[in-house]
Amino acid sequence: MNSPVEDRLREALAEAGAAVDQSALRPLRVPERRRFRMDYRLVTAAVAVAVAGSAVAVLAVGGAEGGRDQLTAASVFSRADADVTVFLCTATAPKETGCTAAAGPEQRDMIERVLREQQSQIAASQWVSQATAYDDFRERYAGNQALLDAVRPADLPPSYQVKLRQGADRRQVTSAFLKAGGVAAVIDHAESADAMAAVQKGQKTDVNVFLCTAGTSLPACAPKSGSGKKGVAATADQVKAIQQTIQQMPEVKDVVFEDQAAAYENFKQAFKDNKALVEATRVQDMPQSFRIRLKSDAPAWALVDKLKRQPGVAQVVSHWCIDERAALHADFGLYLPDRTVCPGGA
Image 1 (cartoon, rainbow, N blue to C red):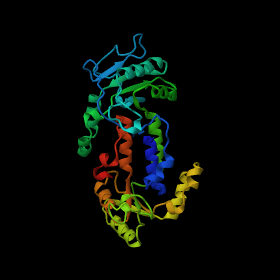
Image 2 (image 1 turned 180 degrees about the vertical axis):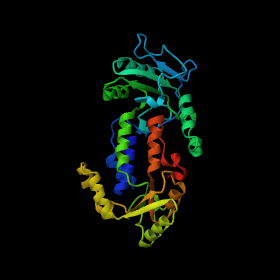
Image 3 (image 1 turned 135 degrees about the vertical axis):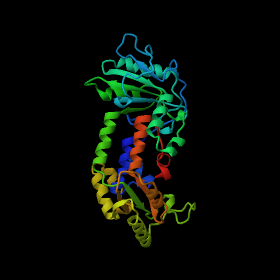
Image 4 (image 1 turned 45 degrees about the horizontal axis):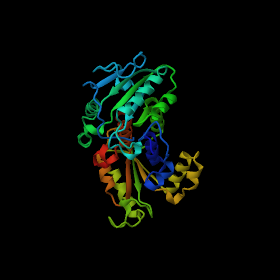
């Protein structure tokens, strides 16, 4: 099971020239449940829960009654200020979540029991319905019509948002929620933000263009489309043509070519603490790549789409797209592929 951070780190292997063939990513997968499910890990279908017609239910965690006794249409705190979000299972949640059915009343009771049991750690909590989540989603992504068209109201999982007390044991709280039934993901927003910031700090590339290597199973490298045969390596002429195409693109600030030897050295450095993975990887497993920096932070859909179609290109990785996928999971509990999040399937 992946996490938004694991997905981001995996794609950050683009920096090390290693995250191309999906089969090569298997050693990075971790089977246990994690606080970040995607961890982007994301979405769907309706949980039949209506809270007295209100969009948001505020749970008076510190009160004597607890539970659902206090309902209001106004939230106690801004959704952006939540420390932890607990996303519930939906009927069609993907396998990454570990969900087998939509969370029902019994599962909600279990989660609210955790809220009461963790009173000493939790200052306040609020219920966010699917309808409210969908409205927020449409407002956030108003400029991305393709994404809006791809996501239905039933795709947004309902959730509980939690504000922690000063000095709370965050791991204890998130662990308690993960043990409750009907939970698709538990997001610790501080931990997620710190991990993403650490990855982005060292990032020097906006787009990575990985070239075909001999024997790869990636469809783009097959000698004939749909033949099912193993891929062939990009030729010298193809590499030259790709470089010329990149250099002529107005969005490109600069481009660096990384050969297999350099990619392998970067890979070993990036995974020096994972000896098993390093020992199982050879220089010839590394793809050659072009590392591109753009002139602005704006996503260059046309650039990515054009490069994907160049002969000899195995895969094009847009770091902007990866970051968007992480945000969609952490903020809305959505598990969406690149082709849905980014125009042209970047």
